[in-house]
Length: 350
Image (tube, rainbow, N blue to C red):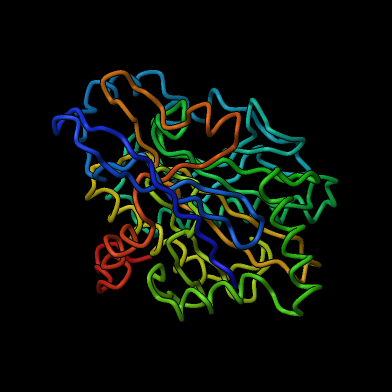
């Protein structure tokens, strides 16, 4: 397992120090699986002043289609072969068709009736319930042999900087016969790795990260948690790898608890930095992909300039597809690791 880092140096004359020579480090890191590069640069302290969101939350509440008084009136229904009642339910969580779907079989799952939940207050059981609801949907799609029931995809955009157009917590749930770009590249590379080495890349990655130690965060059940070596996010990624698991449909109740607890640990850690937006994606294979391991990436999102609501996706990221992280992943791992190793709080049980 090679963790390639190309170290560079930019030299400037610093106006803050009477034009003295200043050296600024830059790293280009290469993802061991796909060869995707990520630049560690543009450094800043990962502490942010959280704005008062009261007006935004209250203004969005009156028109929210996911709140309990509207969700059954304004959301669409599935055909009876998918959901005889039109929608799927678990407690106060509701899953219904995405009115603007990404594929031939798309859904949205609300994470309960509360319009706004601060990131650090999202309970593991709420997350586990939402994933269970998505799994119910995927099982139904597979049972009717829906042609899109190949890759079962689950993502979460939390708060506006993540790309979410609604405050109310919800999951994006869809099945597709066409793997998204990053997943397709990862599966192709993992298949090539398996053929070359006779091992599963993700198993070797976990073993290497555990042995090296600087980015390893801990293990919950059969789920290993890591800080991403070549992050997608400007504030680093948290990666979860599920041992001996290829698809979302293979997750057990213990796995759901582990995923939920790990996610809330990541949320708690980044909340302490003042970060309050994130993306989550699950990356599955198919049931026949022996080289695949279900893994998940948690990516915090920020505004570069909160006053202007400047997003953290610039031309470099959008068009060059080059990721930037403003801190060293090993330093970020040291900051967030205590949340993964802290005793579990009884009020937040899954």
